[in-house]
Length: 400
Image (cartoon, rainbow, N blue to C red; front, side):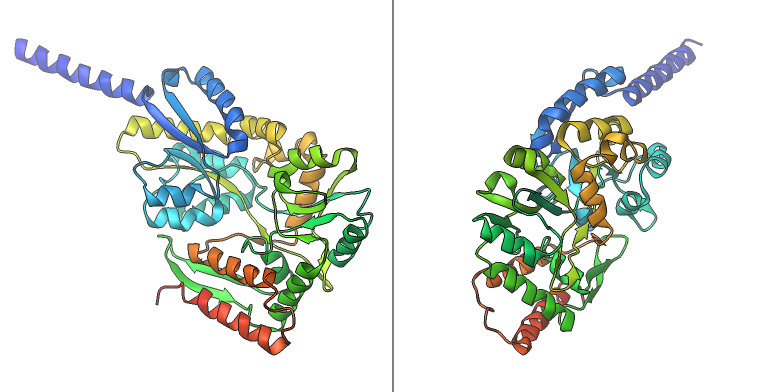
């Protein structure tokens, strides 16, 4: 009897310990967010702890690593990387391929599907597996402009003329593979990659080496020739700016620069076609954990930071556009100038899928050549040859 009692007590102690572990976590979690949202996130962590007292003793270390850098940094050293991190949707395949992102906790999946727009749900899903939490539906770009200088923002040719006449500058980062798709996709080209459930590239769909591609490249070349053109995409780094192609992350800086002349709209036409580009989402991922209690804490934190409440507060604090359906439908979001411009532009955009890391360097090289005036006097045949080499190189990134 005494031996049985000891065994029962021991079993009860084990069950109690397991229950306590599952109910809370008092260790350390590292969180990566964009620099512009660090202070906002610190405040939200305190709210999270108040709403979830089981995590009141948890330490959250917040580091400023943006969505454009997070995946690369994490893949380089998964062990030292953040436990919870913001990343752009096109990085999902890379993260999945190296096992750097955990699937969403089963108990959170229904809420993710029900509460966010369909595009963002598709962005966090590969095959039948949901790998991340939708955070924003604003990973795209549009036109900011000074309405006292640019009175007609409908064509890029007109914008450049108006800026030049006023001695002002038009900014766009054409040596960025992200921004330059505004020309190529707008002209009717495609460049997408296929991937399997493990994140491996299995195919490419590219038509840059075409009449449409030449048209796009010629438009880039003519844009770069303008005396008003300056290569760049950050409002904080502009000088004498009257027009800028950027996104909602720049809204505070642009408002500060333009004051009462602040305006925003979709991208203009150029060469007779509507400029396009990438449209996408910022996501919140959780790194795989050996400690189940820590994994539960990471999932709880990720779910909270992507909730309607926090997405609404983040929009109000830093202007990031929500993916949450109720937050998107709020009067404040609907009446916001930048959000309206983005929503209009996204209607012309291509969803940003999975791209190999080499693609971004390839696009930069093409833009660098344009900026170096290498193609200013090139004929169509020469430009087609340039684009054929670009397309062949882009295709070589797919495993044979």
